[in-house]
Length: 99
Image (cartoon, rainbow, N blue to C red; front, side, top):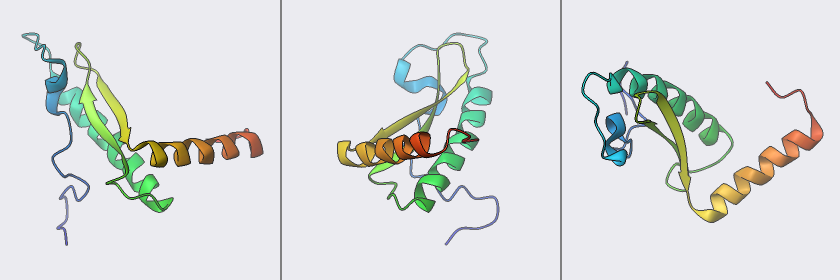
């Protein structure tokens, strides 16, 4: 389905280089921040898949802030995000030594 080095989690939903803020500051390296955020978002998306979530229901999306720092946003439907919150609450209540 995907080749080596290909980003198989990408479906065009990422906010490339701060596009959603509408503010571009000359000289700010938005791509570096977005690239770092993309790696973390991909890791979280793989974890969500491993926990049984569909990425069409909830997913991590790479973005940047106005200063070019990477940001990862969680986007999803209410039921999927509620399910994720419950899983995290159970984890927090059952084992405070989460990594």
